[in-house]
Length: 423
Image (cartoon, rainbow, N blue to C red; front, side, top):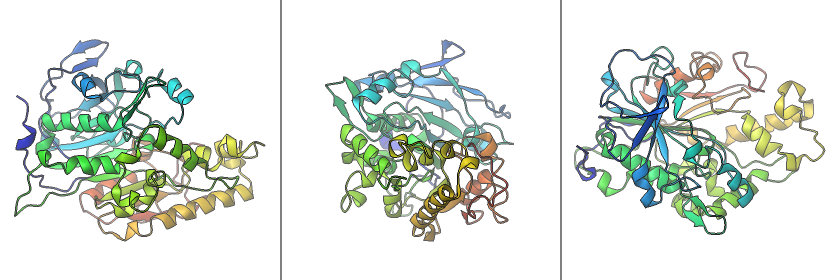
């Protein structure tokens, strides 16, 4: 029996990102695939310890197609769910898959032929690692929670809502987000006790959709004695930075996305009431206005931003940065100085944010990207000096459960010898 959305009870605990749920039942209109064959997921999983990195089957939201919640080519949206067990039965992690963006007809048509634009090309099973892992050793605070990964196939951070007649492309990320959450609510998440929303890269700019959806009256009832907590989230910070040519390559790129996918209507009004829509697509311009507790997990030398925002090919026609942006050891003194200035901008951008006791920060000095799902970085390195020497997983758990305040900003590169650099 499906849970009635209008009959949900207030959440009891603050959550790390979104909301929580209890039972894990698949709706009859869904199809779950695993090991190459169709099967139905059982209602409950054994409470026995689960193996690390189990393969989690895909589920297609076929019933949401008629509501327009589709990938760019019109195929159904999808997600992967590994049900919780034991004490984690009523707790949820919602993970928004990353994967960049597209900003014009050519690049979007190209993505339509991949899993970033069509569920026809999505893997039928994926491994859950890092913060999504079912291993108590690798993920001690969240291993037994219900863990959901919403697949990314709209190319605008789950924020667009339009149809391009000229290309025949659907840009329905906002609808995908809302339908995915609505489905979770209908099968148990409405009664959840705690929720954590995590994202990376392309899933990075959906703060407004999160709050608007959860504030809808059909999803909760306010009571005089018990207020509804805002959900919490772990996120990455992408900056509106000046590139090596003196321009703002990423801002120009984002402007195309915001216009092409009609993103402006879904951005936070607390930002758009004084800034243009493109500026409000950058998390740095909206985090100070968000009351949701947030944990910023970032590298001060985020490699994606180095390659695509600071030194994209368009801003580097001579190729002077080609070696440096793919190999930190190849950077000369001037280039290192430019990267240090980028770090300083990042640190300055979170000054006000860090003043809130409810927020957490872990900014390390590694050349990395999306560290919460990589086993080597989630429950391994890096550490931040002596205070946060146990690393990312422990720091996120300490913040979420209130065990300690986490405000970690690492010293500048190359001071940190615990890093696992990827360039």
